[in-house]
Length: 345
Image 1: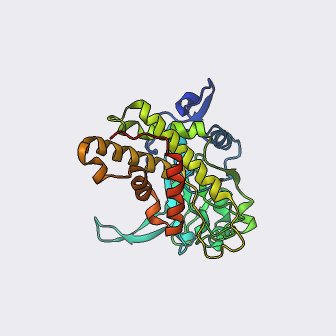
Image 2 (image 1 turned 90 degrees about the vertical axis):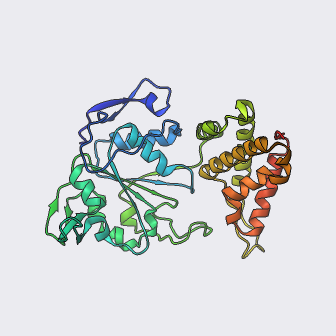
Image 3 (image 1 turned 120 degrees about the horizontal axis):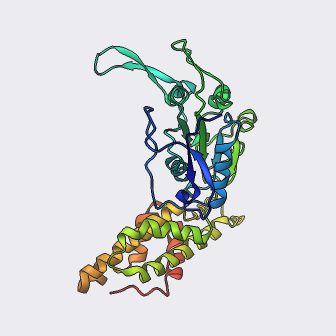
């Protein structure tokens, strides 16, 4: 059982509820890892939040939590903001193709102060020793055999350091959270949107709580975009900001509908149109607001210097990194969604 020390009001998570979530006292962290930085404007999806809460407060704390979903939908940020609000220290590790279990355990290295070799704990050892939450991102980029060899850790066993002979018992507060674009048992399948992924062994996927994360409903996503853009809307005013966000949400929804359509039989070699993620949506909206503010400041030269702020913002936020065919499609969608928006001259 975890050693919780304080109830955290649900309203701290932006939820209209009088219930509390089990957590830790603010400022009580004495571990070598920090509590994630709090983002007061973060918007939680209630369904995803409730799934995380149930796992967090479950009596069996050995099973990791696995969140999977499309890029930029808020998996990692939601995890970190949950931990920030329950004041749980975390260590974050991003997987790569060339890694093995030892990367999680630690390594020998030179101490810069003494010039002598000493042992440096890896992320898993730190979590096991000090009661941290180990957050593992891009789980399926690692070879399948890495996680098969780490099955003992994934089910909460003591950590055995073969390099030093030390056995580190799992601290009661140690938890493991995994995020990935692909479900553990389905990586490497699908339309090729996510490359460098490996399908994981069934014995690995069997050990997790599984949460499927998607883009938030429109009203929740609107709150997230407005919160992210509130600091850069000084010159344009709240009314224009609301209209810009509304059109941007229309654009994101249209791109997601288009991305979800099956490719035609004769479309071999044609790149798939990307869904505008919440992350890109926020970047696009903030960039567009900045360009509109620049037009207002430029006055007479505005149309010559920034003739198409919507197109320019889209290019900077995403489209310049896409195939030209995809870029053209995205621009057409944006022009349609923003056609009725009057931008101040």
